[in-house]
Image 1 (cartoon, rainbow, N blue to C red):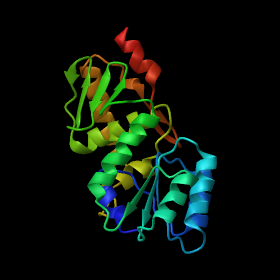
Image 2: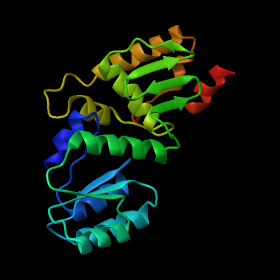
Image 3: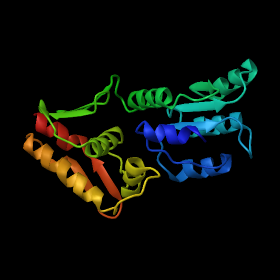
Image 4: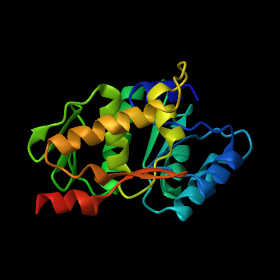
Length: 218
């Protein structure tokens, strides 16, 4: 899907699959915040795939790309559970903005800010504050904190961070993630927060813990 590279450039973590069956398998075992699929699947009816995904998860945002502008096709996609149907050349930046907004709503956020206790991330400007104090983070450190906040209480793997931060570029040693997380925890502590709100679950991944973040606000 040509849109995948543009979505990565816009700051999204993207996992690409080749056909409908692979998407179904990935949905069974992976963690997704949103789905973008091509209606013209090589191995199955795209609308049937939408229906399957919607039955599996009633809340996940589903965006459909199609080369045809036929109203009957669009109507069927919506009927099966698509949130939007997009035709022709995809504006990846606009689609990414839609996806981010939908993911925030699904996660319980209604504005461009992600708020977990005293931790606030302004996703429009890429700024994080804790207890009213700005966290001095590099772009990659901010992106890690945003990923954790969007997936609060859920694990994010080291591989997911690497795919998100470096996409198809040459990747550094994966241990760089430990360096970024150490810096994030330092900034949290300097701002009067609990550094352990960003937890390492050894062998599995990382997560942000809302309870610890909220406790600091008390």
